[in-house]
Image (cartoon, rainbow, N blue to C red; front, side, top):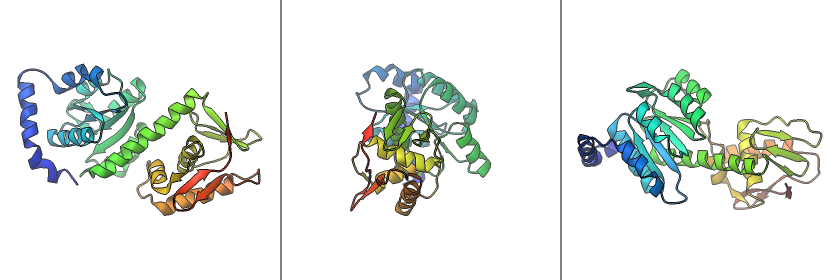
Length: 271
């Protein structure tokens, strides 16, 4: 599924948008005014995209997938939409009134929203800059909507884990280790940090946050897919193997395999 296959189907929607603008009421203002009517439990997402076809496609698709979505065609409209609580922002790099990388810095300073760059600029320099500045993912067009949905859910789940950790005084103890989900640190019984890659930490944090429930390999693929181009079941299995080698000391396996499902934390947690 990509942009080209949606163009003709969206023309009617674009005509309706044009009619709204003709009456002097920007869509972003309308959406912001309605934010108090947002159904409880739905994450709020802003699509910052100057191309009306792409913007309408993304707004429609994510609305159908139970998100509360606001469209913004410029930096100014994005700033206005950010006045209400926001969980995630899809951000184009080239905007008519500013640079997407600079806007990302503003978003990061003003809110706790996740940021996924969605853009045609696909050079390595742009990709690295976007991830270093503030981005959780960097997606190039044409857009695969199902892939983008998976990435969005992955970012929101990871941030939910971080918020839970903050409410629980930032750290959780299990076995001989303490994991601090806000500082993204793992400490051994001697108080010294255990070196983990980002993917290893994200996978371990997901297992700790599951309260002993088994997590499927497919779920863990989403958890560790951040900033990695190719993630599959073999990647998850390799990460688990590396964690098992690093988490030794108690004599009890830290991560247990659940046949036909995936993995779970084998040690009891203590707060």
